[in-house]
Amino acid sequence: MTSSSSTHPGTPQARNSTWWLGIGLTGALAFAGTWAAQLHGIQRLGLSALTVTIAFGILAGNTVFPRVATRTASGVDFSKSTLLRAGIVLYGFRISFQQIAEVGWTGALIDALMITLTFLIAVQLGTRLFRLDRQTAMLIGAGSAICGAAAVMATEPVVRGQPHKVSVAVATVVLFGTVAMFIYPPLYSHLGLSQHAFGIFAGSTIHEVAQVIVAGRSVSDEAAGMAVIEKMLRVMMLAPFLLLLSAAMPARASASRTRVMIPWFALLFIGASAINSLRVLPTEVVNWLDQLDMLLLAMAMAALGLRTHVGEIRRAGLRPLLLAATLFVFLVLGGYAVNRIVTHWLG
Image: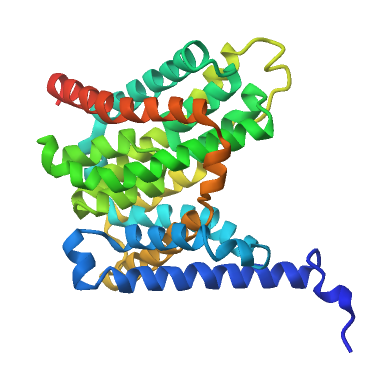
């Protein structure tokens, strides 16, 4: 007879079980979302498999998931983080250096301007208009300006933010990044942008990498490719951003220096693009990697949806949400203006 300790939540067996159950849950949602996206009614709405999958995840995350969260948590979080980054790296096999060169210095300048302006607006409006403390304003600003929750987590040790402030910032950027993912595709036909230009616009203004992929693929493969490249440039600016922020922080706030997070997955994405540009892999292998990539991204979308809880957003309070909403409006309208102006002068 097996002892009860072998199934205790803290034992390796229990952790392994929650990992597999969580992977199975995200895999099942990914399959359901991919299947549903093939239905005639869904196709008429123009929703991609990734969009449908995250919608299924959000629905499950706010209904049945809380009842099974303790038994699936580790696998769901693995899908949300590791599988997402693996999917982003594999997406590089769809991209060539020629496409990266098409983004070029124009795309880099757009990203630099959007990061700088968004963060400065967040700090100024957050502390002066919305009466938030400086740490919360900075965390929301970093998440909105660069790469969502990952940027919030990377900025926390630099500004010495308390856990509850990190949670508030993450909740706000997840909310408005998800909104962006759904509203950008319908906006495409009204913006007067080519698919190439729309991709750069989406990549320079949407919060999370995953959300950028979903929005881009809902328009076209070309838009998705440009969007991901532009977003990867933005993610790679996280390291210099943190270095500059650390140097600018008061001595008491930055006394305990921490290592600056290097977005290794972005560098691996470039490596995958380099391999694809050399055309050394057989077509069959590239096609297999593309299919694997879609599976990993769909599972990551399901996990992101499962971890998007309405209660956390409600607990964030009104003022942080108002700041995040203001930044979202700037990202859409101001980002569109910045894209137009920079492209006009340098394009």
